[in-house]
Image 1 (cartoon, rainbow, N blue to C red):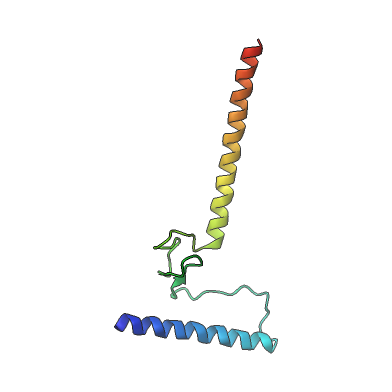
Image 2 (image 1 turned 90 degrees about the vertical axis):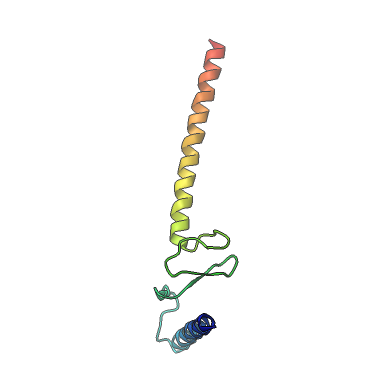
Length: 103
């Protein structure tokens, strides 16, 4: 019961911050393009399953989705680079096999 009250209070505070920011944007007091900063103590809501996760979570506890876009992009780039290396090595190996058959 106490946890539910804390969660509701936290949601209310987050909503108040969003409303305040929108009012500032409307009056030209905040740049719309400025990247919003997240309160480091607030929970992270999963974009995929809407589960609340801890403030420092990198992956959703329920569905495993990335919670940090920057980390997701870095990991995807690294995976792509690894796949390119594997593809190149496979092509070299195949080329070697073909050369041996020809000779």
